[in-house]
Length: 126
Image (tube, rainbow, N blue to C red; front, top):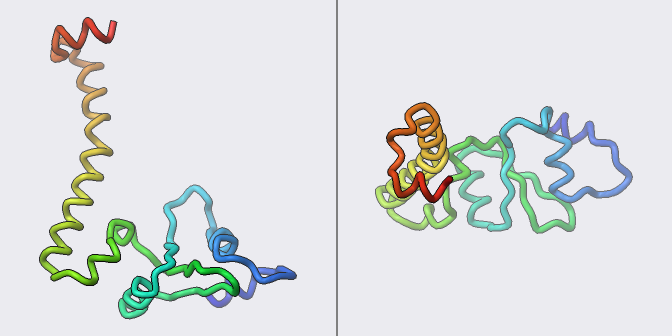
């Protein structure tokens, strides 16, 4: 991380968003840096072994490296009991999977098996 930050050549102090863009190798990949403005979130991530990058004049802190599951973690999870936080995080991940796959399953089913579509819905669609 130090070498990537030192490799940035700029005449001014850059905000956190620019530093995040310079750090990424591929702009189409999943993000490996999270942004936060909450001091308790930064502290918790530092205690988990992550790096915090502060930019001069910017209230945003960059946290790296970040995993996909960390994007579904709420700052309030640090203040609740672990069983409640884990349950809520599981609900968030399950909701994501349902929202991500349900439409695709529905379209695939209707495309290849149109007889499954209820007759009332078929009249509305046509």
